[in-house]
Image (cartoon, rainbow over all chains, first blue to last red; front, top):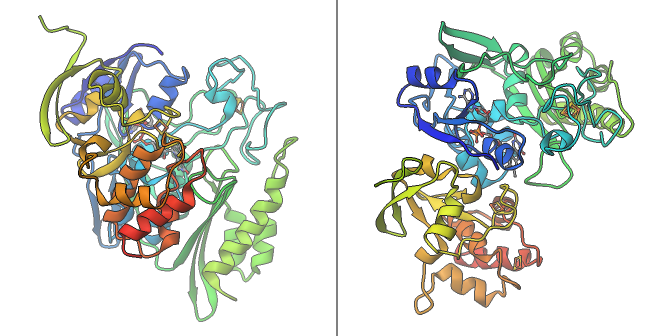
Length: 317
Length: 156
Ligand SMILES: Cc1cc2nc3c(=O)[nH]c(=O)nc-3n(C[C@H](O)[C@H](O)[C@H](O)COP(=O)(O)OP(=O)(O)OC[C@H]3O[C@@H](n4cnc5c(N)ncnc54)[C@H](O)[C@@H]3O)c2cc1C
Ligand code: SF4
Ligand code: FES
Ligand code: FES
């Protein structure tokens, strides 16, 4: 394991300054950064502790929920103003101990669980650009169905991000030039030829908060995994519906475990508001899926998970 | 002369104030076991996956192997050594013994520290305890008895 220096950022300005230096990495809860460092995947020269910055508040005003990037997942899930879909996704994430440590911002920026990426000596374009993608022709049971490239087929592992995508949340980012907001589809990059960069963030930019607009409807988070608890998703679905007079007037669907970012199922959403059945929505959800040798089972799993999630939210609608 | 590579750290450890220095790369687990000699807290996976290193920081259970020590300056840390003694065990420790909630015992300190946090949440039933304890693995498979021991202390 490599050595690093440690500095605690006293305020946001200091964090931006220290974080922009080459080799610097922010530490929030540290649960992913320390794993990657111990595995030899990431070797920061300088760890900048941002965990005490005043970006922890969870607030609700006019139905709009704001989650400070440094709020811990356990605090978010316990807060009465937080949308139940977010609470469910967090309750299905990691373990009680990790939820006490992990932060909102760190969770969104955690890196893929692809085994090649997490092993310092296997081929992986994301970890070591140009070394090849070990998963493409190797162990790819966990790989993505959508949004991949020949350079990388990894999925994003966050459960919270899937719930936030379904709720049309935005991420507020602070950089040297001020603040900007990105939707989750804009925050995460698709791999293309440069899979080494997961997010559209410049070095030293900070996630300050996540803003979640109101959604007046029912929702569920369905997570399918290899064991019942303390495991990443094979496939997950966040579904939210607003039903009026027996008609679906608003539908939101996002899938996890199937793409390099939470994958909004917009064709299925549009069909549902035009009177499509849950079965038809399930069929639309898997259109365009591009399986590899070992992950084709995820297509049928996704279709069924979409139907099950919709039935849970919408009853017999 | 203080070593310029080390970081000053003030902790409350099992109720006693401690002034220490740590390397920037030390985890709380390294600090507790190697520097402070409190070997009740175990190192299993060192990657957040087994729960053997579970301790309380400011009353909340965490995995000491993924906690960078320097980041916990000022925290109140409780380890298995801080909750009971051989002469005066904690009720949860007694329940573990009564229920045979261990075989080799390696996971036990982590199970008990995690169980204490679960008891604070007043679990409503056995299923809640099982789910809440999923971050603590037992290689010997004592899980049913671990759940039973926690349930007894919870009054279930
Ligand atoms: C055993 C285990 C099981 C897990 N299971 C699940 C699971 O089921 N579902 C799930 O979703 N996750 C799971 N996780 C992942 C876990 O949720 C993440 O490790 C955690 O959320 C990361 O948050 P953190 O605050 O600890 O991040 P850190 O490790 O501190 O940071 C992660 C990354 O984000 C950067 N960063 C952090 N905060 C900011 C910020 N505000 N602005 C800019 N950059 C920032 C850091 O520099 C670093 O690159 C699991 C982890 C473990 C160890
Ligand atoms: S899928 Fe992506 S992360 Fe996995 S080996 Fe290929 S390049 Fe690396
Ligand atoms: S040693 Fe910390 S979780 Fe396994
Ligand atoms: S008692 Fe042996 S690992 Fe749990």
